[in-house]
Amino acid sequence: MRTPPSFDSIKLAYERIKNNVKKTPIVESSLLNQWMGNRILFKAECLQTIGAFKIRGAMNFLARLKEEGRLPKHVVANSSGNHAQAVAYAAAHFGVKATIFASETISPIKAAATQSYGAELKLFSTRLEADAAVKEASKAPDTVWIPPFNHEDIVSGQGTAALEALNEVGKVDAVFAPCGGGGLLSGTLLATRALQPNALVIGAEPAEANDASMSLQAGEIIALNHTPDTLADGAATPSVGDVTFPLLQELDDFYEVDELQIAYWTQWLHHLLKLHIEPTCAMTMAAVAAWAANTPPGQTALVILSGGNISQSSMAKIWERDFLLQPPILDFSETEELHETSEAKA
Image (tube, rainbow, N blue to C red; front, side, top):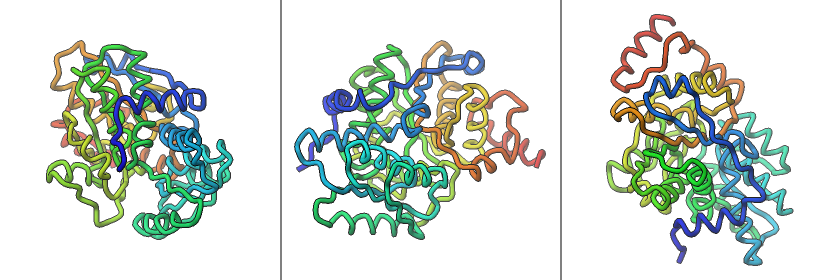
């Protein structure tokens, strides 16, 4: 029987991986703070090795296997991109062969990076086909499947980002992270509850891939029956897992974010922070803006910027309209105004 992830397992994960991952910086924008009326701190995992937080989970998974003398000859993984790169990089670090199974919608830049780290990449028409293929491949001798989120070692590894950030910044009033399969958000919840028990923990996902939202409302895991079409490709998972879902149920709030807001906040964070940031984590700013609009001024929020790997085609879609002509919209109630303004410019 597997042991659920905990704050203790996050601390152990941090000791395992701290010398093999970057301690990413905390950044902020004085202009954004002024507009929000609150201090917004960003944990810049977009500057992490492989350009995303996913390296933390993959490195912890393999480091624990090595620690226990169970390192295999071959690892397999299924991923829409950043987990693929992370497994490829971590496998190369430990001298293990890696094969990645993904859908044909994988970001080209993430696919190229995965192959550059030495992994074999196998593509399928849909994410569900890729998931079925990796399950079959994992049955081969001396082969281990590294899941993208639904494993205690993955959740614990991802939780080290929040652990690192909260130990650096001290007291915060709210912590935000995006949700795909829920590994990062679950780890963030565990670290925050232990280090800042009075802080809110809030998640966000694309409205076009709202399986987590539907699951939280229903009280049971609900999977999407289609392949999501969203700019936030890192959150386009078909469902959360039985490891992450119970933790997601402890969240203080959760938001669905439409595609217009994802593009909007990606543009604004690029402009304000001068960082290359994925739509998946920029999406979370819609939740931050809603929180700030309904929060007394002078509070502090921590946002986990999960990654910075964006393809040219995604960038083109993000910049189809210029949203930098007015200050950021800080309230979901103003979304209709955003749509009207965009349509007028189209």
